[in-house]
Length: 260
Ligand code: PTJ
Image (cartoon, rainbow, N blue to C red; front, side, top):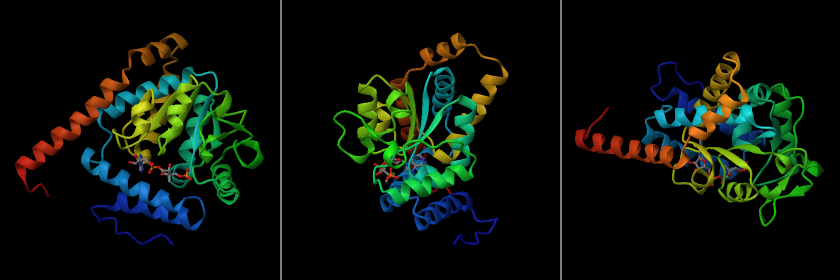
């Protein structure tokens, strides 16, 4: 049951986001560990100042270009993504002609169906990876995340993942796929392995990705223009900038002591 959070509450957005996750947990979308994962994300978001930083914006731009230039892009959806940004998943997939696939670490048929329902209610025409549809597997990946849909992640050239446990990104990259990760933790294995790591909160990054993709479409960017944008992007450098930003922010705050 969502709480009544006053408009004036200084942490309103953060509390509303928590409420969405708690409702998602009650509705069997979100794994128990998904609540813990969110807490870790919140801690990093604090360090980043709870804004889409300049380096995150650079990653978002490259990610929009990569999604638009892909042949078979897939947006991978887990419990937290389904609870927080189902509409944005469908909009982004529509804009970039990407497929939408359910892929869970804590897989259960009940959760897969619940997530599919939420995505369909948000306007998805097809949701891959549910039940027997996840009949293929990622070689050498033993977790449930290894189960993929042959029409989706198995044949994808580009996969967008958010709030991952790390293992799968490494394996997807080994298979020659390009991985875009949304992860607030720049030190996570996912962020380190992905070719494009968006160090930002999912709830800000998804709308920003949609905005960028729309902009490229309106400006009629050619395949060549898009590929040029992707090529110009350097993930190591951009991750380094995110880490430097946290470092600088902490140094400034430490100097001031009190900052409220
Ligand atoms: O739904 P399932 O079964 O697939 O399970 C999903 C979870 C999230 C439980 C699973 O993937 C997991 O355990 O993930 P981790 O290893 O806790 O990693 C989650 C990462 O996402 C961490 O690096 C967090 O900092 C980051 N994170 C958490 N909330 C957000 C976030 N990144 C972006 N936006 C957020 N809102």
